[in-house]
Image 1: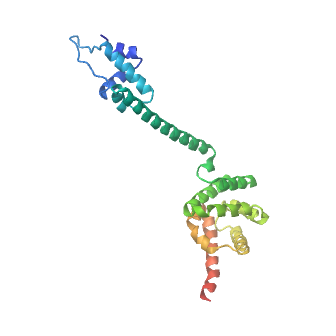
Image 2: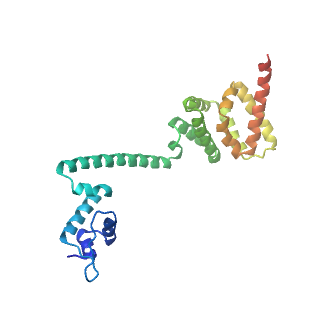
Image 3: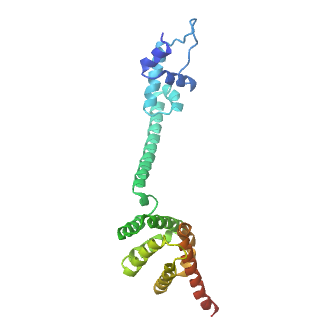
Length: 245
């Protein structure tokens, strides 16, 4: 007969594990003897070793008792089911690892490759990390607003890098985030941006459609609240006469 410590040592588990198996009903707990000790027969050691072996193989504790008493065909079927479940969990863990690894690359976790490439291009042009964070957040919101249109917007952004004037304005936008709203340069910059919009036939309807996405920029910069509000006012003023004709 074995004490609980001797039983645990024989099976290669802890006393705490033995007590846990008692609690979940996998291993019967003997009554105390006249000396106040619980004594375990050799069969308990055999049972405990089988329980440990199944648990270490990945069998859920809830299924161990049934497997211990299953016929060979039932055992094989149950093992096949457990193996399939383990494979599913392995696939899930592999996907989690892939997503965790993507965190290291930052933008690629939530944005498609063409958008990430544009962000990398902006970084290479010297755009600040503050502006890049705002740009990334804006693209995340654009993707939520209209995911079907995202490839078109990303392609247009990529093409814009070939225009020196547009690149200059990108860098000016980056610089202006640090200006005060009443900085004299703001008025001049609004004129430049509006002229650029007119030259590129800016679509006011699309501006309305993506207003929520660009709100991330206005949240971060009072100056850009003023710039975007003024541009919006000019678009609406220009559109009013056309609507009346």
